[in-house]
Image (cartoon, helix red, strand yellow):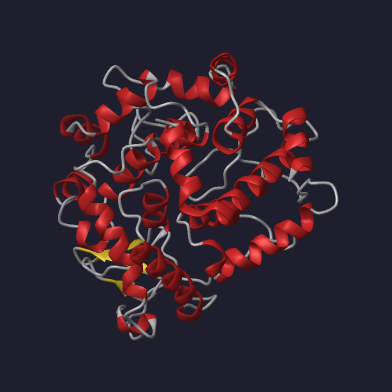
Amino acid sequence: MNNSIDFLLENAGPVIQYRLRKEILCEITPAEEETLLAQIYQTPYFKLVESYAKPSGFIGHGIHGHSNIPGRVHETPLQDGETAARLLACYAIPQAHSLVSDFVAALRNSDTLQYEIAYNKTNRVTFSNRYKEIASGNGWLLPVFTMLALMGHGDEADVQPFLNVCLDAFGVVLQVKSLAEILTYKPERKLKYNYPYAGANTLYPCQYHLTMLAHTTSWRNPINRKMLVNAINAIDALTQEDDEIVQRFRNKGMSGLGQFNKPFVPYTAAAGEWLSRKYLTELAMLGVGREANVICTTANYVEEQLASDGILKGGKAPSSKYPVAYGEVFLEPNYRKKTAHTCDLTFWAVQFLHYVNHGSRQCLKTLEARS
């Protein structure tokens, strides 16, 4: 992997340089860290997030969505609170930075949350029911708790009950032989989008549950690790490529929050990379190693691609580089540079293989480095 590291140290921007040196190589002096963080704080996206911070500590308007209400319209996707939190996590901004610590405090303030979320009649009902929906692993507290986990606060007492729900969600997969056992489907309903749906208390794993577990530590033990290995492999056997799932609350259908309703797809340049790199990284962060089939297949492929010159090559970078909930992770500040997308891919390859080969131990080191 030396060729990959040399390429990144020579060509990558400050975010990749910082994360490579601090989280993977563990070779960074206090002066180097201060210099790289200062450069990160001057990157365009960080400056945007900084400009969206409010006196309350909340960043932007609302969570996981957009609004056409005057005063709440998003200038950019980073003016959504969830996207802002994801950028702070992707850039590994230290928890002690006031932008992070104030945002975390705002997410724990019920008055602030109510103002940001419950700004119309529908959302006021949703907000009032936010604790009732935890059992399904869904609802408004799902992105809120995930944001706290991404910023290093997912193991604390107020989030712990939902962390247990995340584990239970993956455990459900091992208790059923088909999705039909946990879903309701009424084919006689003449609706344009008549998909099988999960009820308000139906638990099934989604992207947010994965992110919560990937960025926390208190759940980690050999029993839970083995359960997750089995669940990841079982999802591939349980789901079909054309499966669709929606969640239904209060007799109303709503789209699911990234439920794993299709088999996991190993990374290949030919298959494209929409969400692939992000969820493969988080699966690897669980410490499942090569026992998870999709991780084993991807690791073998990535190692083959790096064998010649240490550089992972792919197609054109997607036009949007914002770290939205269902988007990929991009860390370079300037995509006019010819090497920018290649740096993203190569850093991902180095990071992914590091998690695969070193398991939970490396994930713990990564999370500790951000504290």
